[in-house]
Image 1 (cartoon, protein in one colour):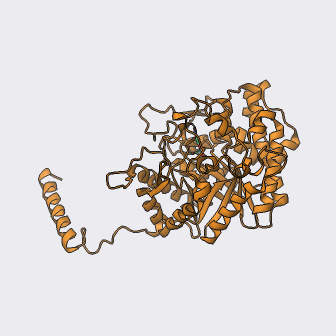
Image 2 (cartoon, rainbow, N blue to C red):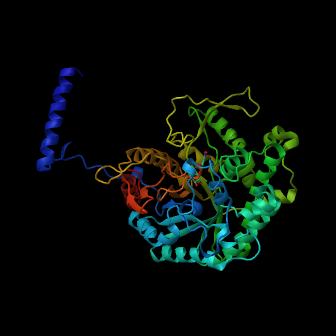
Image 3 (spheres, rainbow, N blue to C red):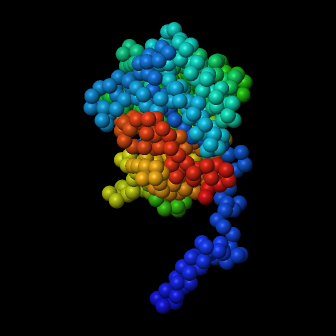
Length: 487
Ligand code: PNW
C-alpha cells in the first residue's frame, strides 16, 4: 500500500471516528459488532473465579485475641530484614475490616475467596492448648463469605509458623513440626468443614523453603545447605501428607483436600515435539523435592543421585504418607523457565539463558511469561493425570500510584492479566481440567521482605487510612467474571 493511500485511509477513519463520537455511527460499519466474548473466548461453564490473600499479609491484629508470635513477627521486627523495616503488625487491618473486604469481593462478582488461617491464632505455641478465640475469627469470616454467596477456600499454612516451633524444633528442620502441623490441621478441619469444602494444606513449599531456609531472604532467615536443607524439604512434604490424612480423618464428608504449590515451570523454547518432551522431563526434575514426590510417591532418580550423601533420610512409610491421594492440585503461576531438548545432558534438556532485557515486573523474579499459565497446568494434567486443577495464585506487582482524579490506571496489570488468561484459556479449551482461578491479590498487602513497596492488588490500599480503591484491573476482572471469558 502506498503512503498516499494509507494517509487517505487514515483521514477517512479519523473522520468517521469524529462523526461516530457525536452521532453514534458504528466506526467500522454496521455489520461489525462491538467487541464481545465470542464462544472461542469462553471459559468452561461453572468456572470458579476468585481472589486470594494470606493471613500475615493482610490481617494485622498480631496481638489480639490470644494470637501467639510467628516467625514473620520475629523476622519483620529484626532491623534490616524487610524494606523500610515494615511489619505486618497492622497490614490491611483485615482482622477488623473483613466485612467491608467481603463487600469488595461481592462487587467484583467473585465466586470464591482463598484466604489462609494463621496457625498461631489457633495454637499460639504451635502445639499444646488451642485458642478458640483465634479460630473464631475464621468462623466469622467464613459465615460472612457464605452470607454473600462466596465460597471459602482455606489455606492452612501460608508461612506464619508459630515462633515456638522454630525455637524448639528449628521449625521445618524438625520432624516434630510436621507432626504438629497435622494435629493443627485436623483440629481446624473438624471445626470448619461443615462450611469450608476446599482446603489447601501448604502454600508454596518451593518458596518458603528455598527463600526462607536456603537463601535467608524470608523468615526464618536461614541459609541451610546439604543434608540439613534436603531434610527440611522432606519435612515440609511430610507435614503436608500427614495433614492430608488428619484432615480426611476429621473433616465432614464432601471436603476436598489439595495444596497450593508454586511449581517451577518449564516451557518449551519452541513448540516442537522434541522441545515439548524436554520441557516435560525438565518439569518433573525441577519439582522433584516437592510436587513430583507428592504425586509419584518417590524422589526422582536424578535428584537422589545428584544429592548423593546429602539425600534426605526417609522411610518407605514417609513416601506413602507424602503421596496421600489429593482431590485437586492447586498451582501458583507467575513465571517460567525456557528449556530446549539437549541430548548431551543427563535428563535430555538444558535451560535457555534468559537475556538481560527479558521484561519483568517490579518484583525482580517476576519475568513476564504468559505461556506459564498454559504449560503449568498442562504439565500437571499430562504427567500426573490430575483431574481437578486450580490456579491458586496469578497476578503481578506494579508501581501503582493514584492519578490526580484518584483513579489507579494500572494498564500494565490489565495487559499482564489479559495475556496470562489468554494462555489459561488455551489450556481449558484443550481440555486441561482447570476448575478455577484465584487472582493474587484482592488488594495490595504486605509483600514479605519487599514490605509495602511492591503492590499486587486489584484494589489500591492507602495504608494511612486503610481506604481501598478499585484499580482499573478490578474493572477488567469484574468484566471477565461477568462474561466468563477473557476479553
Ligand atoms: C507468592 N519467587 O510468593 C506467595 O504465595 C504470596 O504470598 C506472595 O505475595 C505472592 O506470591 C507474590 O509474591 C512468592 O521468588 C514469592 O519466585 C517469591 C517468589 C514466588 C512467589
